[in-house]
Amino acid sequence: MSVTDTHSFDKALELQPIDATRMRGRTQPDWANMVGPFGGITAATLLHAVELRPDRIGEPLALTVNYAAPIVDGEFDISLKAARTNRTNQHWIAELSQEGDIKTTATMVFGIRRDTWSDDESQMPSAPGPEGLAISGPPLPWVGQYDMRFVENPFPAEDAQPSQSSRTTLWVRDANQRGLDFAALAAMSDIFYPRVFLRRGGFFPAGTISLTTYFHANGRELETIGGDYVLGSAHANRFSDGYFDQSAHVWTRDGALLASTHQIVYFKG
Image (cartoon, rainbow, N blue to C red):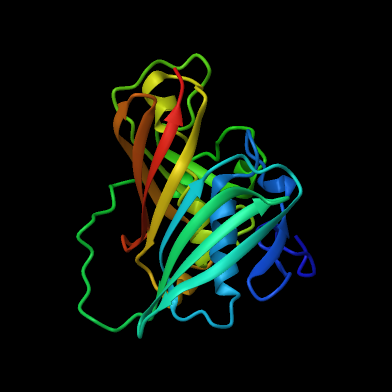
């Protein structure tokens, strides 16, 4: 990619103002999933929409995205409302629609971070470095935007056997080593394939309904990571009645927790 080219991630995040409360964007083929765009790029776009607001305060603390209906290729509109602004935090409500039909809703909390006592109680799993591991992943457009190197339980083959563990651990970075920011971290927090694929051994219809991401790092921490690898690990908690939830964490190489996520997923089979 030349210095004059727009990175595919930044192109997907491009938004043009319509009026004081609405912005317009367009889906990008590089970020296509099996049905519609990759959920992580949708989450990142909604977060970025608030980042662009001149009345936004602080940095992202929490993001919840509810995937109400599939997004089709083409233009979409994002409407934003600052539900409440306090001294140190701000609450936002967002809706993504196409031709007036709401496809995704979201709530976000931004806040002013303060220098306080800190400690990482969550521990990064022991893992070999990424340099000796092979790049792998399913043949989907959005997957090609990342350099994924699995430590355990990569995307299962069609003839895979059921697994007793739902845990996957992998190193990941942008394929072109774009620097990490909050929008990129929001997208990376959704790179984990549905845990039912691993437990059942193969592909089953599944889709995220609601995803919440908590941002533990501040902007300065993300800047120091640059385009380096981060370590992600995900596992499920319970499968029942056509739904399951999965939790995930993302760490730096030296074990600092960047983000934690939780999502509820619909599945068949």
